[in-house]
Figure: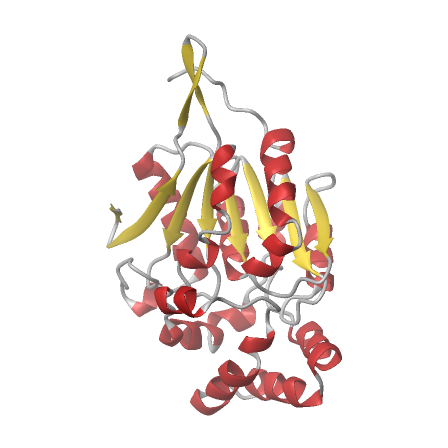
Amino acid sequence: MRVCVGDVRLFFDVEGARLAADGPRFRERPCVLFLPGGPGQEHSIFKPAFDPLSEVAQLIYLDPRGCGRSDPGHPDHWCLATWADDVARLCDALEIEHPILLGASFGGMVALEFAGAHPGRAEGLVLAMTGLGLRPGLASAAFGRLHGTAARSVHDGYWQQPGPATFAEYMRVCVPLYSRIHASPDEATRGRRNDALLERYWGGEMRTVDLTGAASRVSCPALVLVGELDPLLPPAASEELVAALPPGVGRLHVLPEAGHGTRDLVASGALDLIRAFVLEDVASVDGSVR
């Protein structure tokens, strides 16, 4: 399905009902909105692994502008503020007052930007494999520790001198090392990744992103998940993120044997943590039909 949000149409898919029969009335269930990473990835990175969460919430999988089946829009609008505002516009169009945002990697940064720019709008945040921005020093050390000096050299070469050649080498060498559990051939074929968007953003705005201010304005519960073996945004980046949130807002879980990938998170028990977060930590929505 597509919905118009200003200058683009965004594609989204839905798993699970918003209203659940509860005796003589309908009870409104929470809504979890999934934000993929990259930027440049689309919603297929979550499916079907996260579909079981539809037992406790309605799930909305989004392709951000420039990604997947959504309109590309103008490249000048491929920026963090616009992606966050698109989330607000999508929620307005779908009449979702208080979403729970689940952002993976860069999607977590979009979720943080949204929460900072639209205070009180998010009901909860699940910030997975993310941080306040990229931390090249932490990533360099993690690539070296986990994958050796050759991988670390490729990472450092791209970060220090971004360009088509170093980007291509980074995609060839480093990206396959992100996660321990990779997509099946069928899953990889189904997915759509906009590498041109990724290269443009990583060579530009991504190098200056700092969400410390946005994190300080978060007022809803936040579940922070990171893989023990994440080479891109290792646990220290999540610790920095939790420290930037207001006291008592964030709760960190380091998932054993997990790298930087949604399949890694699921294999390490993330769904149980997210399910408990939705049912126990996030404030319940009034169950009456409005």
